Length: 159
Image (cartoon, rainbow, N blue to C red; front, top):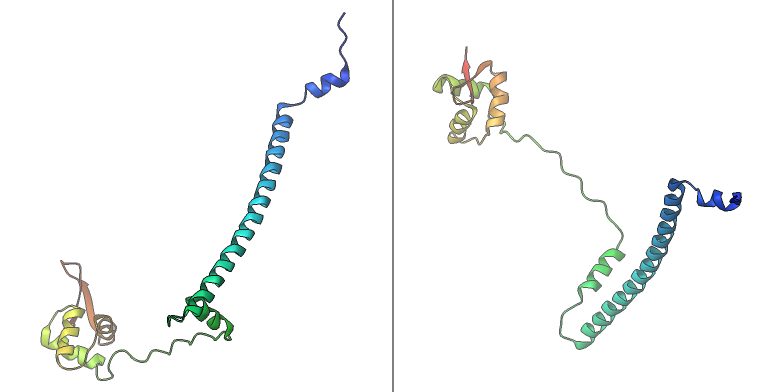
């Protein structure tokens, strides 16, 4: 009769999942070591590049060709205290004060039904530069009714 050693069979009969996990852990440990080596190499290469740039800067300044090294100017800029960016100034009224709802109403009486761009062009030709967006706003305040024309544009009219 064949005798089976229980200790050896339990090791041989491990789950395939456990074996796969052990292989995976071994591979991950190998990758961690490789990443550590690459980081050390990277740090050494950075030091070498920094030294080479410094050498080129000193060689350029020693040659006296009149050109300053670009790195030196950035070093001076970074050494200065950081300043806050200037905030945007508040916008004033973009539409001239002369252009009011009454002006838009008068143009609508003159032109009849028209688009905001046509109204703006008429007011601008009279000497007060204005855009279509302002005209849309002012036309609503002037009591104009809006409808969408066949061309898809909004048209304004009084009444």
